[in-house]
Length: 113
Length: 115
Image (cartoon, rainbow over all chains, first blue to last red; front, side, top):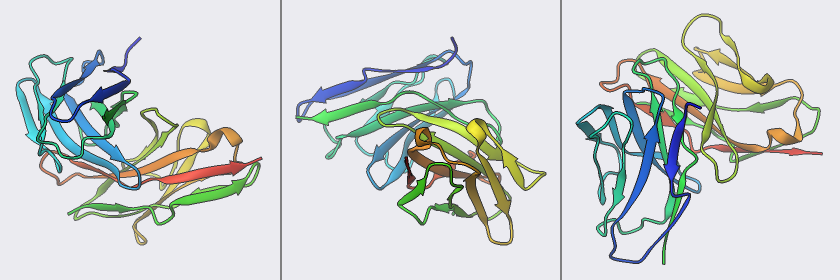
């Protein structure tokens, strides 16, 4: 089945640790995105990538890093510099083109303990 | 800068009644507009989109939306609500003049369908 897979579904992090969230898609989409979702704030863009080996900062990139070494994969690292990392993280992909909709993964809920 | 407003945090409707979830937008050029639905602890699912053409757009699960350029609105509608429609609904806009075709999401409206 085609789709976009995020793992793990739940993740717990101790303060000061880096953690990496996985995002894999087999839709052959060029564009991939990471969003953070907090209650009452909707979705905020962290990073996006329009093509392999290229990515750009979104609106709230501080404390996060990404890589795009393969078309199918766009992992997000939440670093210790992110002061408030507890949130629901969503990965999305879409075909290139202004009128195309995004396909979302099921999300990863990160909790700092 | 583009923006999306969903003025209602929550909408309550009785099962079988028509429902409307409101969305207004602001872009510098022509908009591409989208509606997504999110069930608890899940990702977003695409419902429908407006690109061009007919102002009334039909989508998944019996939902439709009406594009109104003069009022800069794109309200989501359904003639008869189901309890299973209860979820969080997001409106999104993409300005075709944006350099990387950035999409902006609203903060979401929680729809509660009462049996």
